[in-house]
View 1 (cartoon, rainbow, N blue to C red):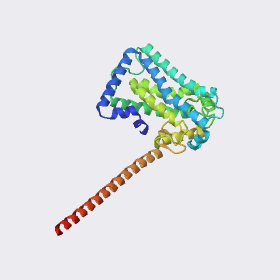
View 2: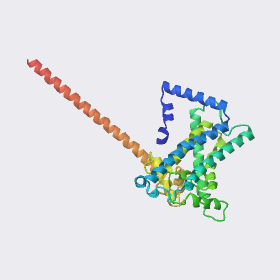
View 3: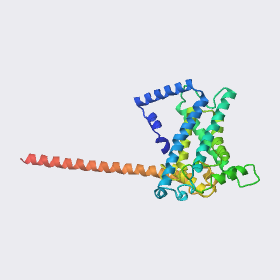
View 4: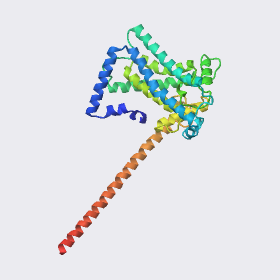
Length: 334
């Protein structure tokens, strides 16, 4: 919630004013022009690429440069299980793997979108000039996010970390361990640092499968992609200064997952890890309690400030009344 409320666009739209109406009108005009002039798969593909470059690639490269150029300073704000700021052999080839994987995931999703459009005559996501209703966006976002949490947990645990060498998922598991868990620590480009095959399964199946069944509006999916990308960038960065208690808990559990070579913490939010007992380094329930305690402390502090201000105001009123009474007595004596 801290992450969502901190987005300027949502804060602007949530503010009831004439500026909000103008912003919505401008956005509607821009969106309508885009829908009428471009094909839906093109909008889908371009949006994914822009979001992932702006919210993942650019910040991750900045974080990587910071970790590399100032390792002593970076170590002070790293999680204990992510104390090593960057991989020891940080070469151009090492940097190109996550960037290439991001382009591969985006290209694969774009191919699926174009193929669906040409086969069925309709876009993968509902794309129209009319904007989705807020309650409809919230409902679809909640359903898709819940399905993503469930699919990600079971894919991550039983396919990418399957210990059985005779199973079908054995090759994917070995590739995932060899690439994603090579350094036993997280670094800023960790989100796409994996072998392409397990990466495609991990990133595409939990997000596209629910959308194929639900068919939400494209704007809903774009907003979800933006939130997921920003969440992944912060959670896999390895920093201990991630904003918000919930995001901070996710970052700690992600770092513990890589430090333990996949011994636990398979889901993004940790809900199913808590339910199945696979949480490592704290669980989501503890984070929720900490979040509630934080807000409770804020409310208590605000109440104390209000009481203090009231006491000061009453004291000033008493002083004024006393001064007024003394002046009246002096005037009556004269």
